[in-house]
Length: 402
Image (cartoon, rainbow, N blue to C red; front, side, top):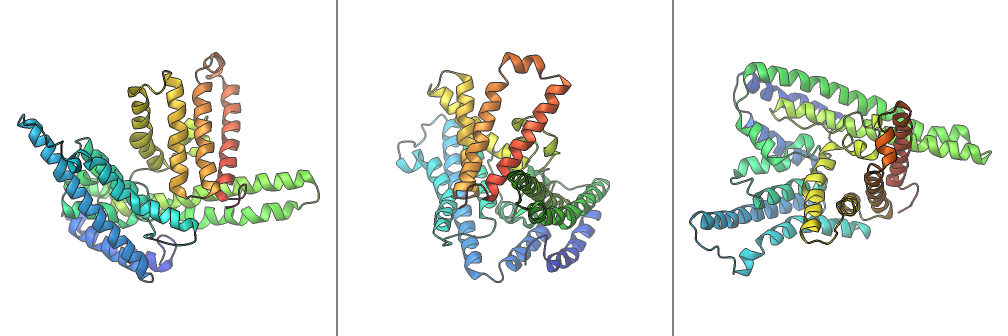
């Protein structure tokens, strides 16, 4: 069964949300039931692939064990500091607890991505990329002292929360815990439920209708234009690239909106993932609107920390050069996260270079002089949207075959 596409999913979903709605309207906690429903849907998702289910259970065991262990290490550190007692940092295991924890929770994803290059599937399962993001985030926030407690049920539900399990949006652990811990008043839950239902219906329309139209256009436009002349071939490729970009948006945004809708039923406020991305005036604006939970996760946990490290270690003296370097590395990691193929790597580096170029251009006198002009905004939008569509062509593997 596939989430958000298989009719069986929608039937099971319709049945499973009824008790959650009753609990919400009666101002009862939905946590225990929501966790049970997530377990059920995950088991159904992997019912025909025992190896992937085993890989998921292995990852959950590693994630849970490592996170609890590292949380205990941090508690020892902070309690020692509070008591003005030297922390046991001389012990290698304590000193390197943070990198050890990060390595353990990232390693299964790396092993899977590398094995996929050789057409194997070691430790891989559907949703491994998103669950890894969530686990890494928790480890980093424990390191930063932002997470001091992690109830086991809350943590496991956070990892396997079924509406976002396969395709996001990427949840934040502290927001998730806040939603789980709060008892929502009936009026507030009704409002959340109505907005969730609206988003679910819009998402279903995006996914079922709009993405299907552009999926057909993807092959129909080049075929209709033919290859009678170089101009027709170019127009066909451009039309195909635009169709793929729009298909990708409606397919992915549809998933995200439906996930927001289902999350609302269980009292979880799933974050928005798209905000009119094709209205972007520059590439930075685009990444503030496209796959927002991914771009903001990369910003918070990679870009900002990398830039701060470069400045702290004085690897670069210029703030502009630091930002440009951090952009390229940050988006390069984004490309690698999608997969170790030439097309994905090129896609990540392409956007890293675009963001770096945008950062340089935004510092010029020309940009500062004309940025508020209507003609400049129109030209900037046109250039940006075509650069984005070319990036989607890279992503699709049509430009650089795997």
